[in-house]
Image (cartoon, rainbow, N blue to C red; front, side):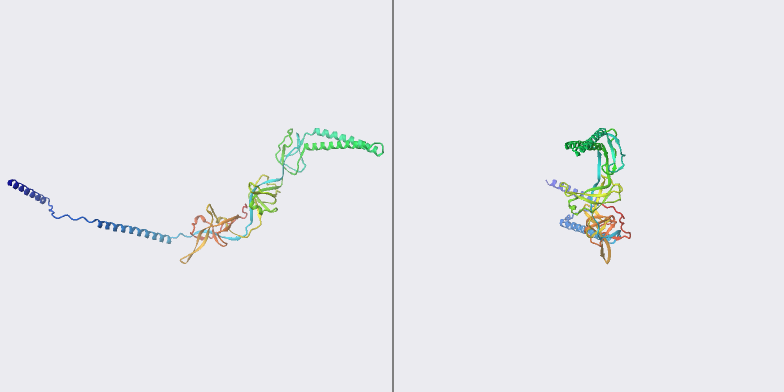
Length: 412
């Protein structure tokens, strides 16, 4: 047993010597010290928190610094004032007008026609000619009526002779009064036949019922016409009716005799005048409108029946109102507004600024607009240049005047 123990010990010593020799050969010292303890987790959390706080603080300071620099940049780099044309709100009296639309109609206009049936034998007019009242236009076949007229005239002649003889005999007491009465009745009957036949003959000769201008011919010689068939139109253009309607609300401002100005598309720039002659006493139940008729003289005969017309009734003047040029008002879906020029004092310096101000507009006339609410007389507004001005921006009044109002602006 002991020899085995001694042998194991010798093998252990040899093994240890080999290990020492290997370390010496590699040049690495044998570390026999105990290993170091790891750093505590709390310390790491403290270090990370300090670093994050420093990072967040740096970002906050940078954002604040950048905002101050941007603000300082814009404060020191203001754009120059925008040059605009200004206009002053004025207190003035504007005409009180009531506008409506309607149409023209002739005072005298008719389609000439025959009263009886018959065949056309002669046309006595030229289309488009001016004729006087009673001028023959169309002759229809009247030979039978002419024969009847000759017959009745002959009967009237015989009846007249019989009546004269009966009266002579009756005056001498040679004949009864009954004979005179019979002769008188026969004569009167013949005269009635003559009157009736002459009336029939006159119906076969169609005449102009009044003076006027003829239109296009609608019949031919030899054409058989029935009663009421139109032959030609006849229109008196010396006077026309202007018919238009106004709302129930405006009917109380209308009176007979008021002046009406008319404009038609055929003659742009021209204004015709007339007078209200008729106001319908009833208001339409379906539209709640009232019909008005004005009479217009047409000496040049340039206005024609059927023309579309824009009418303007001149009403009594209203009190003075505030007005500005029409170019100064911006019309949008959100409301009407103007750019009001105001003075602003900053650091001892006075500047002009354009402030968007909403207004309530009224009547528009001759290039100016009535301002019911929003500004007062004497205020200055931007008349030209609104598109290049931002609300609140600095402006300067240009030396160029505001656009002039036309000498003869359109009236609506």
